[in-house]
Image 1 (cartoon, rainbow over the protein chains, first blue to last red):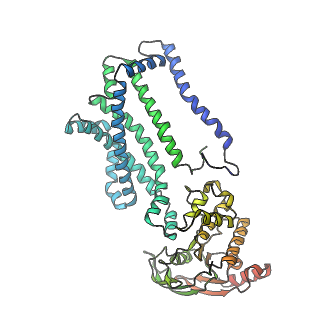
Image 2: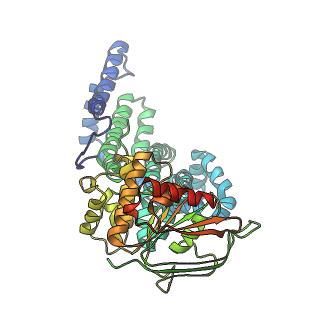
Image 3: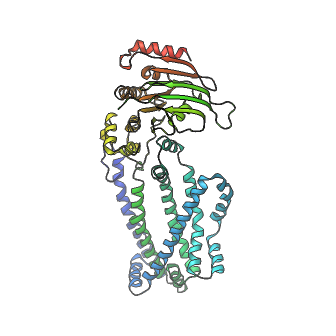
Length: 265
Length: 238
C-alpha cells in the first residue's frame, strides 16, 4: 500500500511491521546452517560457503562464469517471454471459447504431463544440438502450464463487471483496461512466477544434455572432475541472479499491479 | 440539472431461451419525467429483466423502450445502482466514480463523492471502505454521470436498518435537488412507501401490472402514519 494516505485504521498494521525483518534474516540463517554443517562434516566434498564464495569470485574473474551465466540467462529469458506470450494467448482463447476448450483441453493435459527431458531429446534428434532446439523445448514444456493458469483465471472472471461495463456503455478499449486486464494480471503474475522457477531448472537440464556452454554445460563438466566447489559456486551465482530478478523485478511489479489488494496477513 | 427524461415502455415479448413462458409479454407503461417509480413484486417476476431492458443492457427482446424519444440502447447511459456496490476493486474510490463516463472529470467525481459524504475517502480502495461507504461510492458513481435517469436494482438488500435509512435519505435528497427520473426495483413495500411517487406492482408470469398506485404526498412530508398507510395500500395489492 505504498504511497497511499491511510485514513482510518489500516488493518493488521502492527503485526505487519515485524515480518520484513524476518525475511531479511532468512538468508543469513541459511548460510549459517550451511557453514555449521560444513564445519561439522569437514569433508573435501562438502565445502563451506566461504570457500564457495572465493571460488565464485575466481571463476568470475579468471573463468567463464559470467559468459556462461549470460548464455543461460539469454536462453531462459527468450524461452520465458515466448512461453508467456503463447501460453497467455492460448489460455485466454480456451477460457473464452468453450468449444475450443473441449477440443484442446486434453492436449493441454498431454502437454502438462509430457516429461520435459523427452521433449528435449526428441527436439535434439529432429533439429540437432542447436540453440533453437533448446529454446523450443523449454517453450513447449512451459506453455501448457501458463495456458492452464490463464484459462482458470479467465474462467473465474466476474460476470458482474461485464454487466457494469454494459450499463456504462464502456467501449472495448475501456473494458479491456478496466475490467479484463486487472482481472487477468494476478494470473499472469502467478504464471510468470511458477514459469520462471520451472524454466531455470529445465534450461540447466537441457544444457547438460547438449549445448556448447551455459551454466548447465559447465556444471556437467565439473561433474566429470567431482569438482563440487565449482558446482556450488556456479549454483550460488545462478541463485543470486534469480534472487535479483525476484526482488528487483518480480516483486516490485507485483506490488505495483496488485496494489489494490487487501494486505495479506 | 434539468428534470429527467420521460420513458415509454412497450415490450411485446421478452423470453429467456429454454423457458416455457415469456418473462414479459405485452408489457406497456409510461414513466413521467422527474418521477420516482417503484417496481414491486416477488423475486423472479422479471423486475430486474425490465430494468436491464430500460438500461439498454438487455437488447434481446421484441418491442421498444424509448427515453425522451430515443431507443434505450442508444440513449445516454443511465446511472445504475446494482444490488451490490460493484466497485472495481483495483481502482480507488474517486477513480471508480470517474469510470462513469468520458465527461466525468476529477472535479465532477469529487463533487459526487462530496454529495455522498465520501470526499475524505477518495483515495482509498473499495476494500478499505465499510459496506455502507461502498454503497455510497456506488451511488456517487451513478450520480456523477448526471444522466437524469437513475435505475436502482434492489439497492437496499442485505443492508442493516441504519444503512437503509442513510441510503433513503441520500436518494430522497437526490430526488429533491436534481429531479431525475428514477426507477426503483424492490420487493419491499417500505422502500416504495418511502421513496416513490408511483408504485407498479407486478404479478404472474408473464409479468403484468397488477396495480398502479400513486403516492401523492411529497416525500419530505410523509410522517409515520402516511408511510404506514402507503405500505398497507401497497401490501394490500400483493
